[in-house]
Image (cartoon, rainbow, N blue to C red; front, side, top):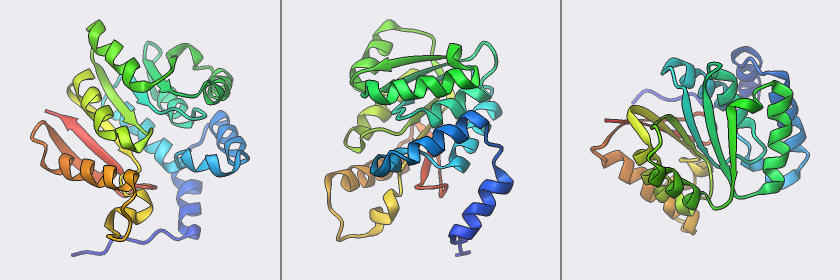
Length: 219
C-alpha cells in the first residue's frame, strides 16, 4: 500500500503558509483561542478551516449547519465561503464561547449570515427536524463525542440528497487504532467510523486532515 506522508511540524507550517488564505478575523480567532490554554485543543486547524470553506463553495452550499461551534473558527470559515444569501445555523452548549465567536463573525462582516443557537444541540436539532424547514446543503459535526452517532443521524435527516456531512476528530489523535485505549469517547468514535463504513445511505471518504475528517455524501 502506498505510504501516506507523515506531517512534521515543519511541513504543517509550510501547508499553512502556502495552502491557506487565512482571513484576518480567522487569524485573530485562532491566536486568541490559543491563549485559552487546554481548551484550545477544541479549535480546528487552519488547513481544516480552509478545506471546509473550499468544500462549501465546491458544492454550491447556501444552507449550512454546524454542531459544535466553540470560539467560532469553523463557523467563520464556512460563513466566509457562503454567498451573500447563504446562512449557517451554529449550535453550541456554551454562551461564553458563543459570545467570543460572535465578535469574530462581526469583525469579518458575516454576522448576518450566522444564526447562533445556544443550548443542548440534540434539542436544537430536534426542533429543526420538527419545523420541517428547507434542508441543509452541508453540515459539520465537532461536538461531544459520546453523541456523535446521535448528531450524525439528525444531520442525515436534515441535509438534502447530495448534501455533505463532515465529521471532525475521527482519528482521535491516533487512539482509534490503539487497543489499549478504551475510554468512552474513543469507543464512540470507533463505533461511528465502523457504522459509516457500512452505511448504505451515504457515500464516504475519510481524510487525514488534522485529527481526521469523515466526509459523508447523502444518497
